[in-house]
Amino acid sequence: MSGLFSSIDISASGLTLQRKKMNVVADNIANAETTKTEQGGPYRRKRVMVESAEEKIPFRNMVSQAATALARTDARHLPGKLRSKGEDAEIAKTEGSEIQDPASNYRLVYDPGNPEADADGYIKMPDVEIINEMVDMMAASRAYEANTTAILSAKEMAKNALEI
Image (cartoon, rainbow, N blue to C red; front, side):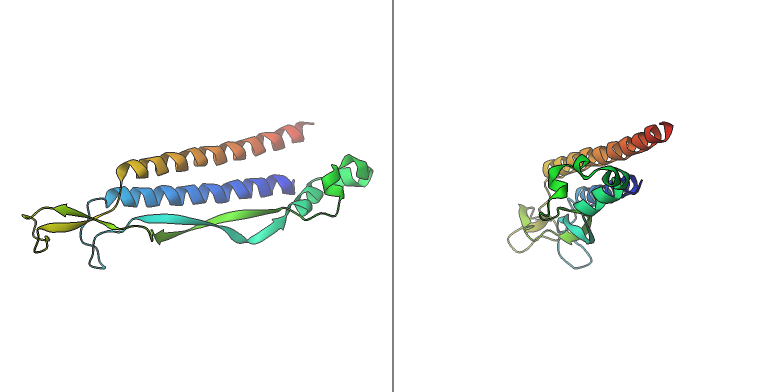
């Protein structure tokens, strides 16, 4: 059962990450026309940097925990790669941190009537492309759905295992 809970835990960290991405995309869309921020300049596009969490679990340990009874009956029941002493693959949770996009720049828009315009009549606008943000939002939404499906599948497998 520990394999079940760890798979749900991994999918839950994916859900948290995708929700964070959706919030950042919503921020970017909401501030696409913001020319003044608390820092003084135009809004700078944000994004989520994805990284693996500090806690890494070797794949071999996860499988051996989940297949302890099977391993006790006969070692030949385990696939060859798990019996060999090769390097372990690691399963890690993911985390995301919200950062200002270092590639983000400003667009200069000619609007001489605007009170924020410079001497040449240009104002600095955020470099937020709505189409790119919508693509990011759809990708995050699909990944969220995939993690939700993985959790539902794990729950269904656990339910079916209890019925045996």
